[in-house]
Image (cartoon, one colour):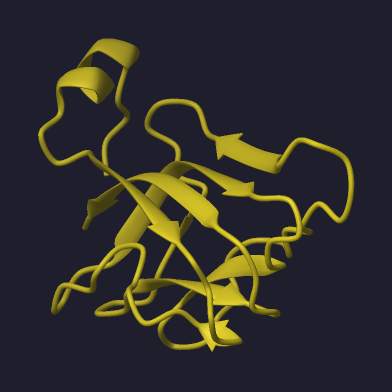
Length: 124
């Protein structure tokens, strides 16, 4: 992957984004992946954010081969505001990538209230 400057980053059609909301009722991988797998491709993640509602579940992102890709995000157990965990890299630098042919999953260590995930990514 070549180096991207800010202008090409914003205009590159291979860069995608997704926002998905989960209401986890099960412990472990959620049924709907954050980003679906494509045969023969890796998912490179450039930025992400996750919001855990009050008394929501603890969770982390992993690929479908079982490799944990982020730290464990801890839920809010009191107060009146959700926890928000953002991460982003400089244009052209990725935070992590999945294995070839693997999806990006949300794994919840507890069932609980709503979690929202936003990811900027590409298939390579």
